[in-house]
Image (cartoon, rainbow, N blue to C red; front, side, top):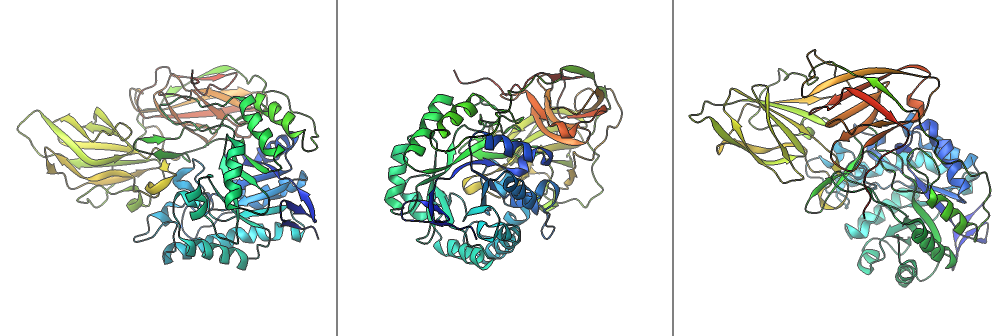
Length: 574
């Protein structure tokens, strides 16, 4: 039996000192047919371990409907890591942050009345315990002391930045051990004394999360973890992007230097991210630290392995550093080749927005949660009262997150949460329609689980509007309704390929919306900065005829789908 334990100064693999050199891959951000390739490429950089979060809301978006198949086949992902001779680290949360919608927590959970998020509140603990038991059914038999490859399991995630409920942490440990987890248990926090003190327990091994000033951060960590191995469980080698900002990058040489300092100190490391992947569909998260900033579709992260799975300059810089401390073998994959570049004409199919449902009107607009809707859009309709003036002021308590306003079917304006817009002058008419987009659920801090939609009261000239129809919109199921494609419209086109291939779809001539290839939901696009292309994974394409569908919310500039040779993720910081 192989053992993996914590010694006085080191991790011990079969009793011998072992330095963990790991990198993060999120199986839920990578097409399953690419899992093996990304793992193999990470190994070629010199890694001996792969780490992943587990996204609860990917496995159980609807309560009681657990799924561990296909994209959610965590067991297969761990087995592919083992097939490459690599160890695995599993971080099941339940909260993961990760710039992933709702921080990985299911909406049904966070919208439960009276629930206490991330603390020892009975409803939360009961649901989390059931979730963890399901995860550990997959993980436990794959532990290294049972012939598998899992060497560490993490309890919660950066908990010291959020809370200090020790009883909650103890309950997570109890559930974990009762489920048969015997490998060492860790926690992770930024190396700030108050976070390290609040976020762990004496029986758990503390690790740090940081991306620079390695020696200083390790010293702080050692003050709070006086024995055992030092480990940076999240070595931030890049950063994420949000709409309206720049494309964030870090200098490969500077990142490699900090990695060198870590490894030279004998510390173990997990590189976050070694390969970021993509927020396919509408899975992106958001941050709100005074301004609401939804995350873009790409999760390239300026990682050593780019969004389409190819090595970058950072890959080679890290590989050189790792080779000083550990064996590095395997062929280095080639740089990203040029993708096929071509254009496909698009045909407008008219407004794709479904009409209002014949539902029972309500006094206030219903939230996404009240509708049980997990999609990105809800349509709200209400009759307008007769007014003496030609214009009136429409106001809402809050819009979460972006709303398009129509009066009698004519667009009259837009309200943006990011711009803190809550009121708009509108012309008089008989019917008001408001289409609200959930642009991404906050994944960090106290706004986890907040309601989405048109948040009431909603007033016209200060008087409440009542009699609302609230209609969920499933963008994966809509079809065009005929028309000339002016304004909001669906577009469809086709193109031929000699063989399946990775593609990069240029969206810079379009407004805001969603794109699909052969029914595969690529994600969101938006004319604002920074992201200009969407990654199309090769397994979503096929030899011969392929179909593209674009659902535009505003206005396209060109009715053509342009595929380009390389990604364009936005302007860099000067």
